Length: 311
Image (cartoon, rainbow, N blue to C red; front, side, top):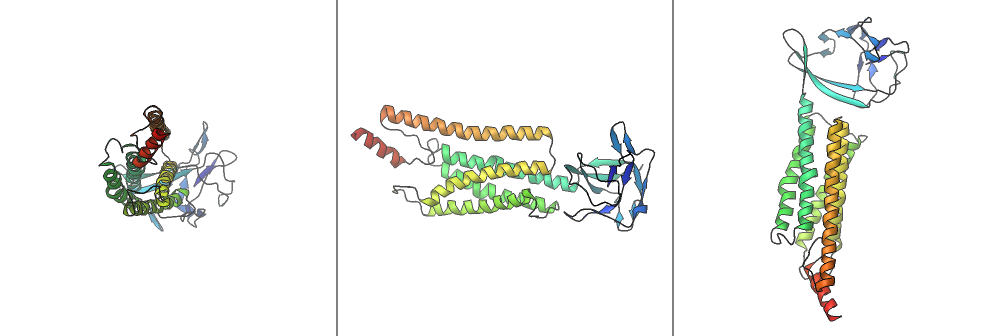
């Protein structure tokens, strides 16, 4: 751990960190050798140049590839006491792999952690940013277009694509070395979304088993299935955002994600409004409408048509 002192020189200490605790100073400070001449604040940039033996007590750098993590705090500076525990949490972080070549030059590449976490992120975005919203769009908006197939598509996507891919995404994070910590919002919300997804699948199964074509009203479990699915997608969008923040994604990735989420939400709202207006216009003009979407049943259309005609 290194930071600039009040006079611009470099302070560096060897520490050990255990999960979410404050890194503590070790008793092996002689392992590090600071180049005081080259270190410190130089032209507005802080530099800490030091050497450490490849192998010291309790720690060895693997020549075939050593995973490293880095973290920065750019707004607050610890006091000049090298052994201080008054340290502010980082606001930027990342990982890389250091490889020793024949000339002892470090080469950066994707670490094992990065590879599995990238797989985790890509899979989870595919599930919760594309597949699950797509299944909802199919259930809500395609009843007129594919009346005999929409349910099978909606159910099949959730059961045979979203479910196994979610499990694969979770396994990828675990293999990367991630362990659940309740204080981590991304971890906590992930458990909520995963549990909520299982609950949503259960509601869908109940809706399917208890479905009555002659029903005259929507039962509470059906309505809960609709609304919980929508809430779950919104939570998943927030969860993806937290994941991008935790991985320290680039500004461009965030902008692209915001645009995509805005597109999904505006499309859902826009198509819903279009179908509502079209159905309302049909009823006013022809006293009937064949427009169907979630919340509108065929027998509702027939009953309203009959009521308007009789009146």
